[in-house]
Amino acid sequence: MASSCSPNPKGPSFSDFGITDSGELYGKNNPFQRSGPKGAVERIALKNDKLYMRVDMPGVPKQNMSCFLDHFNNVIFTGSAPKEWEHDDQVREFGGLYGLRCGCCEVAKLHGNITNGVLRMKMSKKILKNVTRCSYGPPPVDTPIIFLHEDIASHPYQTKGPRESYGAKEVKDGFYVWVDMPGVTKDKVSVGVENGWVLFSGIAGKESVHEESGRTYQGSFGPFDVNKIGKIKTEVKNGVLRMMIPEIGPE
Image (cartoon, rainbow, N blue to C red; front, side, top):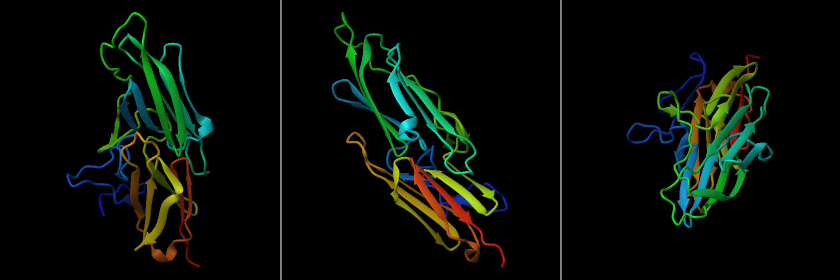
């Protein structure tokens, strides 16, 4: 197994990170991503002055997402991920802005939808009156990426809550573990135990014709005494895998 990161130096830890042949993480913002488009944000220029933009918002349900054009013609998007389990520390919030800075164009149409913790937006621009041609392409108005530790980057549009894409803590009856898997549905997640390690994986399908592919995730948490692991409770909701790993005490 690859390097590990322990929430408790004396207890189980995360391991089996997605390390490439060059020794780096495949996904800088999610160490358990193994394939597919990297990063929490992706932009793809389309034909006819259109743009496709993906923003991962793990944990955010449809009713808690908003995207709109403000009076300055900037694209504003926000999302709030509520606490789903009693062991979740706090809500996570996301928010960002995308604007055209060429001065000769404006965003004409905007469509956004969120599914399984992934916001996908499609926008088109139009040239303003008295301008025959756009002077240059539209660089985005961005929030800089901050590296949390080692090679793991924070989400550039997260504004509140735990900034890591995974976490674990020891609770009364065992360990509570959560892992972001944006785009993954519950029928595409597998959780099992092998040699004392809790193995987890997920497959996020290609949801848009503009995406090059889906994404895959894989990792592990442990080790445990195989005779002391109870039935693992799992839930996948809005692109977040949550697990309650009970430890059975002596009879």
